[in-house]
Amino acid sequence: MTGRGGKGREILRWGWEFLGRLARKYSEAKRSPRAPGIIKGRTGHTSGYPGGDLEFVEDVKRVVGSKVCATPTGGAQHAEARGTTAPVARSLRELMEDLRDASPRVRGEAAKELGKRGGPGVEGALEALLEDADEGVRTAAVRALRELGSEEAVRILREALRRGGWDKRSSAAEALRELGWRADHSEEGAVYRILCGDWDGVVELGRHAIPPLVALIRSCSDEVLRERAVRALGRIRDPSTLGLLADALQDIHPLVRKAAAWSLGQVGRRKAVEPLIAALGDPDEEVRSEAKEALVRIGSPALQPLVSAFKEGDAEVRIRVAEVIGLFYGSPDMEPLVHAFVLSAIKDGDAWSRSRMATLLGEIGGSWAVKPLIEALYFFNVREAAGKSLLKIGEPAVEPLMAALKHHHIPIRKAAAELLGRIGDQRAVSALQSALKDRDWEVREAARAALEAVLQRSGRAGQVTALDEPPGARAPDG
Image (cartoon, rainbow, N blue to C red; front, top):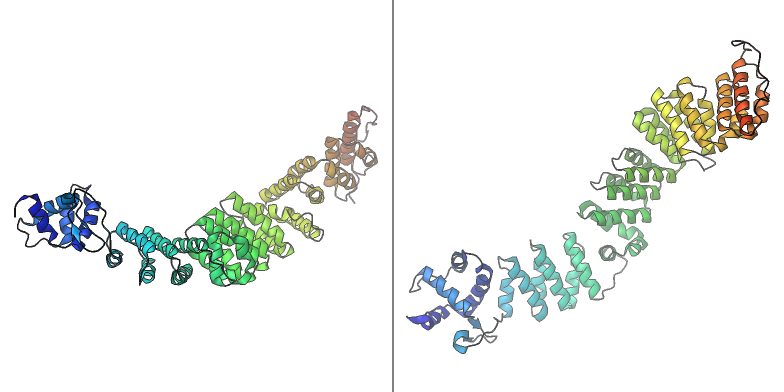
């Protein structure tokens, strides 16, 4: 056998089905300098060629490069002899065989072509391809089933909604949506709505949506999907999901943990309180903030566990718990409990915690904080912080401080007078004048100085008679 044509005809004896496969293999390998070895290794049909194995490979490269092709009817022509080129047309059987090819690209292309052609057994072959190790191949199989659009293809796509990875499920849901499939109110319908992003529809399904939502939260790697699923459970408000939501507070992503805190507050049961208190120590500020709001939303069932956490926790825990309890203000039935807690915290905490609590009350603000702060004036190591907080609160503290001028504890009366002088509100004049008659000399002196300060602001300085009682003279404190 001599000449190009002779060698080409010799190669053609190996059959067009084999050469068709070889053409695709060569297309993959031709860019590599190791192309001959790759082609030879993938054929296994070189024995007996007159020129030897290596010459066979080189001749195959030449023949394939000359566009040797098979016709759709199975006949063959040499494109070089015809002077034309034509694509290789694949039979249904060949395409089905390509689905088992080692190359993901070949498998994907075969799936795509089968979706266009259809034929006996195509749906089943594509269904098997849904379990392919390559994500691109799985996606190609789903798209091919969508292209077919047969009843069997729809059945397979619906089955794909219920099993496998979430990437495959998402592709199946998209294909069904494009086919106009209408979901029912079953768990299958819930999965479909989840993957189509119809979260309102998911919530409307209620308990039917819980199993797929739980499965998604536990197995999906997409934190955005997990976050939306967690929020959907919060909107459904089923107590059976409390355990899962508590677990979601440990999610690796703060987006999911924040959603879990919100959802626990929506479900609003006593069992949600402990996990939320623990979440007050989350490293992410937004998660901590959401946990605080959730505890306030739960309301009175959360207060006693918060008090216990305050008593048992370290200084940092106490501060975070105190911040939450301060947010309970505004609920009439909660205020007495909050007030009692604040007083207990100021009396029983360590010096740092008590001072921080007093400072915190000033930061929270509001008239509700005034009374416990006035009580805190009694304690020497809290007095300065409590006074600063009362000054920060300002006008809402004036009348309670005026009333405190009659408090039975001398330190509180004295501190109240001093603070009224620093606030400088004219409403305090009458109360301070009465305090000039206090049985304790230090209180009277504080009242006199405060009164002068208030009057000076109104341009009436010098109207207070100087006290002539010597320092140290003090009436018994009743």
